[in-house]
Figure 1 (cartoon, rainbow, N blue to C red):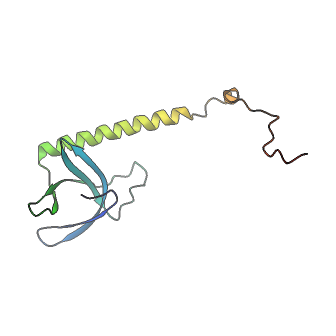
Figure 2 (cartoon, rainbow, N blue to C red):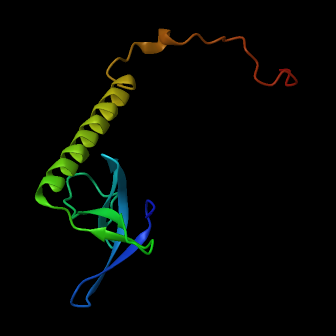
Figure 3 (spheres, helix red, strand yellow):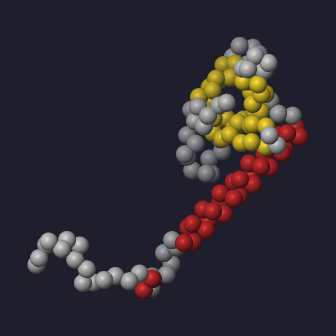
Length: 126
C-alpha cells in the first residue's frame, strides 16, 4: 500500500509518465483511496493557493500487485464529501486551538501564579 509522502509514478496508456506525492490515504467502506498531488507542488504553501489533486482507489491484482484505479462518478462524490468533512473538522480544531491562545485579553496575568521568591538555582546565592 502506498505511504504518505511516497513518490508515485503514474504511467499512462500512451507511455507518458507523471510523478506524484501521496498527500493523503483514507479508508472508506473498507476500500483504500489515495490523494495524489504533482511532485513539484509545495503542499505547505498558503491555503489560498489552488493545487490539482487526483484521487485514486487502491486495488490489488490477482498477482498481488497494487494498482491505482480511477473512480466512477458516485465514488468520486463520496470520497470528496469525506475529504471536505475532514477539512471542516480540521478548520474547527484550528479555530478552537487559536481561541485558546487569543491575545485579545491583556489582563490575563492572574491566570498563573508565580512565586516571586522562587530561586531557580538554589546554589546561586546573591
